Length: 147
Image (cartoon, rainbow, N blue to C red):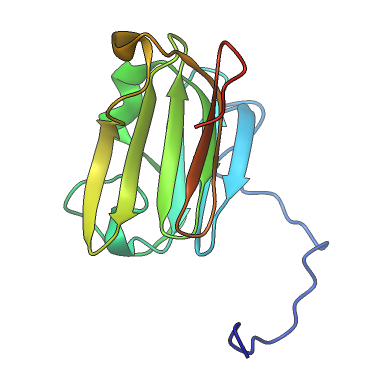
């Protein structure tokens, strides 16, 4: 079988994440990856939790598992508007159309958000949407092109 056997779970049974409460930290967007989750607040602060291996949480040298949402300080200055959690990597889209990545890339990894080369405003290709999957990333530019 291509996929390992997992214990069935009730994925429709949701519980509140107390650290991210509507009163103190209202969330604008979330994305669930293989073993990690990203949450973007209305104030454009990024929180990550779950497995930290391969730098997929963007927390620098701290690659430990985070059971509770943890602020990704390295993304505070990026003005993030969209997030996508992939299998072992993550993508961030900023308000100016720049694209950032962290996590696994082949046999290496980047543990803090870094610009994706060859795309974004500095390359004349601002990004408007992103999606991260298992070992791939997809971006749509402002002209309707898919990367």
